Length: 97
Image (cartoon, rainbow, N blue to C red):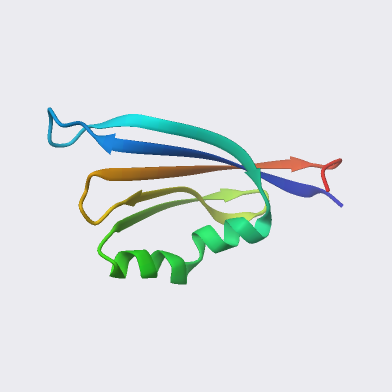
């Protein structure tokens, strides 16, 4: 049976003080997460919770070998100064457990 490895690229951005709409990359991290962590991050209740706090949550979905999943999650803070982009890659590997 083949397993799926999930890689997450997390990019933290800060608003550029000289313009209204552009952001500057503050930090980028890349790592491997498991299915439980992915479900906690992309859960519909989690997204609704952050929207209720005043932030903006934008999701993008796509078809992959393991289903119709979220591959990009963009979160903006309520003040609009910080933005976090989480991009997911689904890698099918028969050797991965």
